[in-house]
Length: 499
Image (cartoon, rainbow, N blue to C red):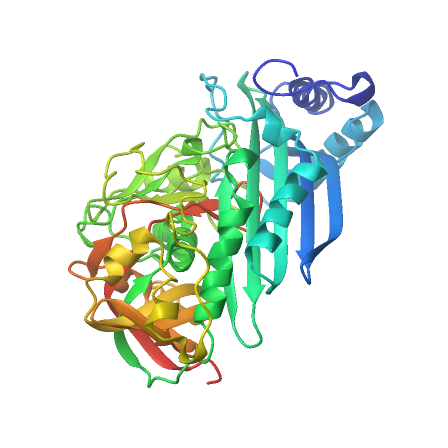
């Protein structure tokens, strides 16, 4: 390793910062000193251990390097990318990007380059996770499979390492490195599934046994579900379900381009959410590169403070449109879809300050069974002794206040019906339970729902917020959502999963 970011490549290859600098210099030589250029170089090591039918069937690893170049020449802008970092490969990248720029229409909204400014090193980095061996992931898979008690198990355990650097022709540069671990597993009985998943900065914080026991308890308790009529029900949403709310709010609501185009529900300064809701995009709370695609320093951004909408995410272009600075959300595709928060935290009840800590380590095993609590006993009908074991202590505290409602594990296949009001339709999955007098009494068949996410979190709609956030992995490495469970006054279920 060299410094806080970058590493010496195999066989004496250049560091990421050296590659980025060389690309910028090539642009200057070929297009002249007035050309503006920015280069981002990233090296990525991804490793994935998959299991199905309760045994490992695939262990894969991928190492790659990517170079992305954006140029602004004679009032025109173009971007290009490649993976060849020798002299010929870099020169070819620069030449084709310059050619593309000269063929593009003029770009009068070009916001200019990020000026030189300090970028601190990555806040969180775990060497052992970055260089984890297959047997370390396999040990967690074995613990998961052992804990499901004979149920069918499937899922994955992954680790990732990224190092990168940025340079532009304005003299700005940055570098960093990051590591991440995630596990997602399912336990299956004959007709029901239970899932447990976790994302963490350290592989050591993933407890496969606790996750397996959690998934098995939920699978057994979900057996023999009953049909309930559609309607508006009070709900307790587990963190996996709340993560879907955060993702859609990030993509469509706190997107600076959509806000500038008046296609977002966000109204800055308005009390649009319940006072218990504080949302922070906080990439440096976890393992993340400390700069964005434009080299802007990433930092915590409070989007909602005690119910009041405070900010949306901007890159340099969307920020210039509304007269504000970039918030560090430059990303691929931002010029078309818009800049998006990718590390959104819903602060738990005990931590309504930026950087506040949850009572238990995020990403750890605390979401498994409580001391003395094993997998839920099996039994017909999913009665109280079975369904009552599905909630972890934090979720159970919210469930205890529900007179009659539903406990929901997860959402999936969610689709936007109205982007501005953010009306979403989707399905429940991996377990729904009827709650009566504070106790989950039996499993319920999956529902289809149609709900406006901002309205569901609106003033007076949030009846309880859990005290511990649980980080949920996204399909994309480096993207995660960290919510606690929520108790909401109403959720609009429109039918069964079949229609």
